[in-house]
Image (cartoon, rainbow, N blue to C red; front, side, top):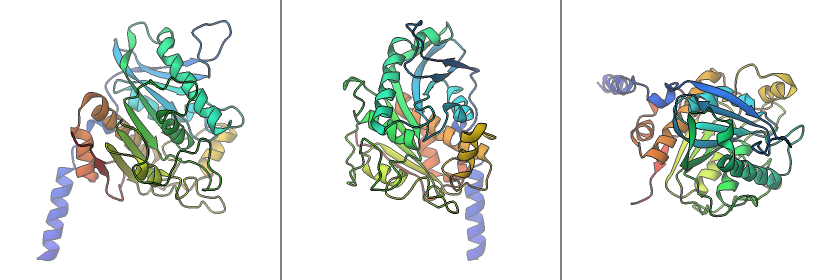
Length: 326
């Protein structure tokens, strides 16, 4: 009888999870990829090279800044960025490094300069019928770029006015350095719970394999510097999702070109599942959390927390959503 009850429970849970939340699927909006580079002859040119992925349907859309990971190219995230943009967001992904990554503070200041540019000159590079929604700007970043997003939100970008307001912050397997003795500037982790002075909704996405070694290579998302510590230091409203069977680079595009693409594929411990499922998961969490934070559409993110089986990937530990009172 106990075994039969267990089977019944599992079957009912599976039936409950049949309908996938819309955030995990591609959105309905067609998109376009636009590149813009610094230029002394164009007053609307960005301070750093950027990829813009925008809906083509007329409308006002929130701007989402996306910061790439250590030594990576912004176009390595094309599938992920397109997933988010198709739900009604303008994605702006600057290239913050060339051959070698700059110092951490330089990267944060450059990110601030790109944010300033989006408020002044982004419109000149968008389809004519598309506009940036002036009220909403969100920060998203992966790996070192996740740490950059947190640093910008915390006010560490000297190029950005302290009064600039963000609507949401999402860290995708954020990393603050190689180890506690080799943290990237600025040092934002305090190792005190709830210490980040941020009053915006925050989502942290982690990977189960990020803290593990890949043969002789050190972990790409080492303990004490990864998603777990970032989440601990956030205040409510905050959420946490961990893709148990995937690695630090598994949300990147397939078949990445060049030497950097080769290194991105072998540096970290990778999962055995399809990267497309990881991109679907990460894109879905970003979309669902933006809906929650910007529009007050809370049903999808709450459902993922309540019923993790709706996720395209296995979530472990159980996802969390701690909502601020009031």
